[in-house]
Structures are given as C-alpha cells and as structure tokens.
Length: 326
Image 1: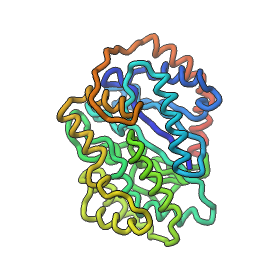
Image 2 (image 1 turned 60 degrees about the vertical axis):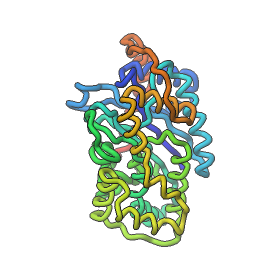
Image 3 (image 1 turned 180 degrees about the vertical axis):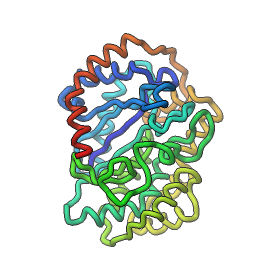
C-alpha cells in the first residue's frame, strides 16, 4: 500500500510559482526520496489564466499496513512543512475562490494485489468507493460559492466515472500501467489523521473481502454524483450498512464530513482564515483559529524553483508521463 498526497501551497489564498522554490528545498534536503516521490502540477487551458500554479505532491514508499503508511506520511508531512516558510499548506480538493476543473488536488492510494485477484478486488473497491469518496470529501466551494461535498469529484478533469477500460488514466479507479497497482484516484486530500486512518482501514478491509461484488458502471456513476453533491443519501446509508459487517467505520464521519466542517469555517471566518487553520491542522494535527501571517509571493523564488526543481526533474517527469500511458 502506498499513497500520493496533493495539496496547495498558497500565498495567501492562491498558489504561485514560488511553490516550486519550496519543493526545490525539499528535494535538496532529501534527493534520494523526493526525486522520485514528489511532483508539481499546473492548471491547463483557460484555467491557467486565473491561476497557473496548482498543487504540489509528496508520496510515500510502499508499506505493509495502514499504520506503517501513516507513520511514513507523518514524516513526509513534517519534511514538507519544514521546507515551506510562512506560506499556507492547504490540503483540499479545490481552491474555494476559483472554478477550475484542471486545478485540483487529490489523495491517491495504490494497492499491490495478486494478478489473479485484480479484477475481483477492483470490482469490490468500485462497489463501495462512493461511500469512501464521501469519507474523504474536502472541496465544498468553487468560485466563492458553496457547491456541496466535493467540487473536485464532480468536475475534475483528472478523474471521473468508471469506464469499460480500467487502464484509462483519468477515472476514479484504475489499473496503473507504470506501477502495476490498483490506484484509487477519487479521494480528496485529508488533513485529519484519524479520518485518513479510517479511510485506509476501509480500503484494506474491502481489498480483503472474501465475497465478490458486481461491477455496475451505471450504479457507480449515480452514487458518486450523490456523494459529490448531496452527501449521505439513503442509497449511501444502505451501502454503509453493507460495509459495516466487515469494518466498524464510525458513521458520524459520513454524517458530518470534512467538507461540512470546512464549509462552516468559511462561512464563519472567511477563506484566508480557513486556509490558515487548515495549514495549522496539516502541520500539527489540530484544526483551530490562528493568526494570519503576512506573506507575498516572490517572482525570484519562482525562477529559482523552476531551475532547482522542475528542470532538474524534467527527465524523470517525461519518463513517468510516458510510462503512465504506455
């Protein structure tokens, strides 16, 4: 089991090219790990006019258990936080004051499974995945307006309803060509370590189910839309009752989602104060009101980061992109 975590570095409410500078610092401190296990992303097309820089990404090495994976992720988060100065680390699926389907961030989980069980485990994960999408939802706003549970799940170009071809990259659940894993791409980033722990435990439990569940693409498309827009619908409540015999997931995590909590923060405190609170939560594990920090993006930092991170990793970026499609 491995994990890729994407999040925004904002100064103060938008990401800038200086994100590359922070990633160059991270790379310099541990090049053996972060040359392969990190990345940066950019908005595309017309979205780039509004905000060119998108998320940064850190990733873990493969781990045998969810607890071991969380232990490594905690260390990777500390290393990222140390490399970033006063900018905000914002672990959400989509920025709140833009409406950009190509400017989103996700949490990707990789599972190594025996070849003879890939199709069965894929189908079982797909059966319960809409429920887990709700468990991870963290992007309740788009364009400054309340959207629902996850604008990213509903509109991101990088994911979508399942297709007949499970190797097609831009969908919620795939057979990853490059790594040979089952990759779950549907989840929003999660700052809350306990919520994330339950998500990983659910994935593990579903992957180990002795039964086989049907792969119904139409049913999946309907339920993922409910999870993204409406939340804990009667259909998702029934799905929870089907999962409960295999893992006792606390139902309150679905009744009150991370998106619900974030939406209340935005309504009460505003966007920048919410980003500051999420930054504190990502760094310390505690979501609370903190003082706003003065900050201003630096063009020179962007230039240095482009040379010291992006250009340095360009050969690996090209190789990785080719392997993901071939």
